[in-house]
Image 1: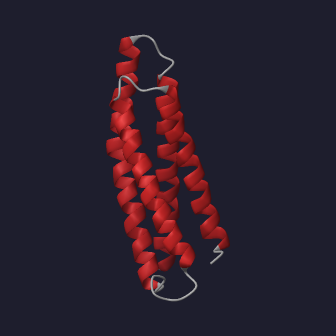
Image 2: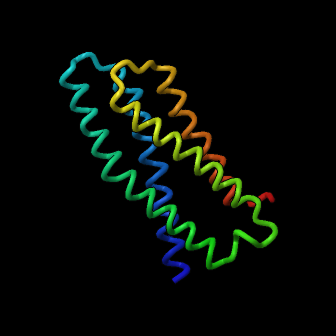
Length: 137
C-alpha cells in the first residue's frame, strides 16, 4: 500500500505543479492577446483547468501526502524538519494557486503581477523538490 500511495502522491504533485506552472504561464501569454473573443476563450479554458484539474489533483496530493506522513510517523519523530518546511512551502504554493485563479478572471492584470506569481510558483516548487530529495534537517 505504501508504494501505491507514494506513486499516487508523486504523480499528483507533478500534476499540481505542472498545472500551476502552465496556468500561470498562460496568464502571462494571455496579456499579449488583443482580440476580446480570444481572451475570453483562453479565460474559459483556464477556468475549466483550474476547477476541474487543479483543485481535485491538489486534494489528492495533500491527502496522499498526509497519509504517507502518518504511516511513517513523520510529523512527530525528530529529524523531519524538512517536512515542516515543505508543508509551509505547500501553503505558500496554495496561496500562489489562489492568486493564479484570481488572475484568470482579472481583466486589468499587469504583466509584473502575472510574472511574480509565475516565478513564485517556479521557485517555491523548486525548493520543495530539493527539500524532499536532500532532507537537510
